[in-house]
Image (cartoon, rainbow, N blue to C red; front, side, top):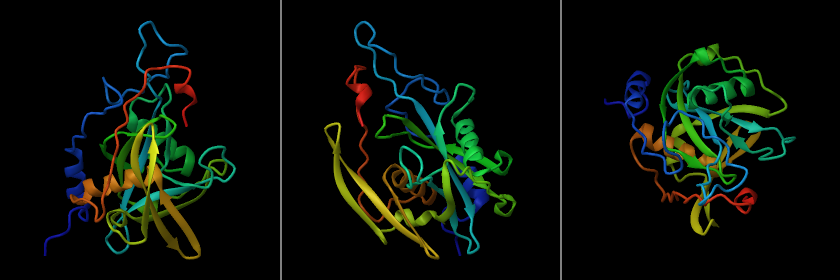
Length: 245
């Protein structure tokens, strides 16, 4: 019986290493280079607004039933932004980061104590733009020995860590959505409900969007529901740009 795409870790690793994401609509040049902050004032003639760059780690491993699972965190309720929300490990690029993978692995180490030596980075996926105008690069990594991972949570940033089946983001079960408008364009926000014991989680927004796309790439099929991804045109830099949500 032929295995479903994504269930054979070795084959998946080889295939994802060959994956070529579409060119980013948000930044040119070296895809591994951190995007510098926007200038303090508009340059003569109006320089294109360049958002900060960030990376998240989509860390996959094989569960006890043979299914692919992904590590997620619940952000600390004490944080000033996105408090209590479900997120992938990750954060903004820093000057010393050599690549998007370096950013994602550094942040995963800082947030949940994940040793980069345990993770095999296999691909970077298409870029996303957050509501705070961050270019977010999903970095896919394979955790081959999940038993060797001993989580150490940074309690200032993370309340808990958990994992979910990656394939759930292709199914219409326990999912709802709503239409929103931002920067003059309509887009769909997806919400996925997940329960583990007495804990209940809602995976939504940018994190859900990244995981829908990752699951589509890994399993080589579209989700069972319509997906509307909008690529926003970045504005020219101005004082108004710096105050966008």
